[in-house]
Length: 555
Image (cartoon, helix red, strand yellow):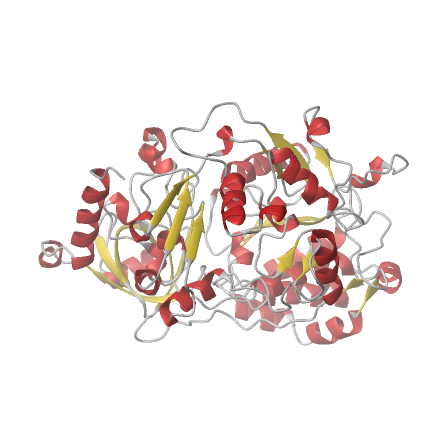
């Protein structure tokens, strides 16, 4: 995804350079390469995104930059939103966000004066205890200015995983069903029960467990089997010390992956080798709703199999043969697209045969009279997928981060990514060129904070939260706010580092998306003395031993 996002950014930057009237605004507590290219960089305090957006809405409303006809004809609940933002004055919001009133007004006015506004966001918005509220409020700005359903405009989520869109379409989360249906809705459950030939009421109305609730269930003894597929929770989950403790209690853990070893395989009772993308055939959907066929072009090594064949065989062994009677990924795809009929993501007209001719954008129903040009841009008719076909304004106030700094933990840590590495380094950690680009973890500290801590570039510091402790070499930089520090999340125990960033993070999550707030937690920082460096931590010794054991394992 980072390479895809970089590609999008490069195209936007070229367009930006060629057109002087185009303005680029970047909202980020850090001055990233993206922020350096912007006309306006809003280096807000962590957790104040929602305040910023509501403050911009206040200015747009007060200065008349709204599309009253669109609001009246195509939306609902605007008065409630207008009432909420009436108190979000520039003076209040600028102070809360830690930016100037001038910059706040400039951002709102550029938005209001632009003929076309495109907004893009990714994990900086999503990984927050108000992630859904923030995304909804971005959409509010588009709705109040009529910046949706037309060329060059609209809210655009840059998903954090390849095929994240495809996973949601297929029902790959605990609270959803295929075709963007909800487990909580009786009509949606009934539709799937009917399609699968299940007795009415077979699908529970209670959503399954979120990723973090599974970890809590292992700790409490309510989860009896934990099946991990193509992910590495011993590095990527929040509060890693608790996560490790919970997995050590698991009665039975299955790890299904194309890579070995990972930090999580050490906790597995059963390893299932899986084929990777080049060794199996399947389809992928990107954020633009474009479906692409990814054909197999090499055979899986050893006993590795495509994930769908593993799931199907387990389903048959459990006695559900008629529901898993697939002989090819083509058949799996055919069943899936048939369940999208008359849904927003209708793909009933998409087959592997058609995908072999090139990618296809949904909706793409199997209706020969369907106007295919309607798929290019959603909502061009200004009708939305709600009962009254009107888009709904969602009025929500900012509540800040879950952990604010205090005397014991005076800094806010934000955890993110570097350009070259992919998540937990399962792949990229083995590529010399990338390792040379990003050889080790680090912590970014503002010069004023470095002076207070009496540290300089290259010094080792110990970072402690309410959940764990890590050590990082220091990078002193003006590209970050005072009081804020940054650490990349990629390095796990297999890489010989006592720098597992997510051991510091907390699991408090957005109540709707259920994504943890990985972007902000309170920490303390102290320099590591020479005496401390001569005493490697117990955790470091344990994981060094683990790495050696795994390297010599014949599993």
